[in-house]
Image (cartoon, rainbow, N blue to C red; front, side):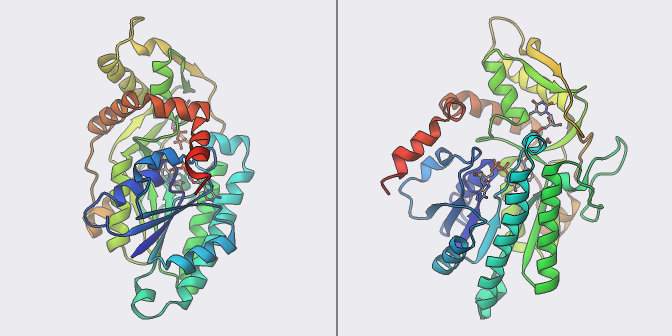
Length: 356
Ligand code: NAD
Ligand code: TYD
């Protein structure tokens, strides 16, 4: 059997592909990985799969209908796992166009291609097919400090161009189920962290900047709250929902780990003080407060009881175990960081794949 993954060279997608091909329950199933390799896509994340026939990488855009049609016809996947997106809130503020193009139009094109493919399937193959849409808790908007965490029925109130584009894609997926009967699953997850996280996002940025002796920029007062989930737990939740989730349902995924940004940065500094102390003193000396993000959401929190009650999933990592693993990973992968920062991984892709 085969699955089609979109965005499988990005942070979560590459973790998902690696975990899929390592997990005893899924490792015999091939992965076709469609990724446009934007700035956020990095084939080096998947270097350990080089020469592995279970992984077929295709460089291309989810908005390219002819390409998606061809991949579906050729590989006959039993599921589409849709990770591909523009994903960085700050980039969406500076340039929202790419977010509409990929997250809204791209998802629309992918849905239409999947619908045509699924409609032509028959019998068991048709009944078993799933379109799994990977989304975010940011679609629900911002919570007051004492408000209950987001459940799956919380109203959609997206506040950034990123979250608005993801909310639009969630609505398309929902409508394709309601109108055409497409067998869809949607998951809305909180902030992920872990290996292969692009160092423009909070946690990897803080690790990388601290090690380079650069400022650690905290937006505004740093009291904005996020729920943090180790990426491996997000991947296991997606595998669980794909295997057991009820068609047409939405599942919130979270880590039961609400923390203000300031605490996250202090935790990263403390771990670095322990694991790679600086001669110049504690890393917190590098913390600087900078101008806040426009429209900055104050708090996200996930109520992940539905996925636990219905499907028996809970995160395996606590924040303490997950963040320690993550800091260690960055310390042990300085070459990966240097490559991403220099753009050198693009050269690596050309060197490794141009003749194939
Ligand atoms: P990412 O930015 O690291 O990776 C996105 C990947 O999609 C990249 O490999 C990129 O090359 C690819 N891509 C972008 N546009 C494309 C296009 N038009 N066609 C094909 N490929 C394209 O993002 P991520 O953090 O791995 O997030 C993956 C998914 O999970 C996204 O849908 C995001 O909204 C969702 N999500 C992320 C988080 C988080 O904390 N990072 C939390 C919840 C949900
Ligand atoms: P980010 O990793 O961009 O994720 P998101 O905005 O999707 O939650 O940011 C996480 C939080 O950290 C968010 O509240 C913004 C804040 N932040 C900083 O304070 N400084 C930074 O340099 C960055 C990138 C983020």
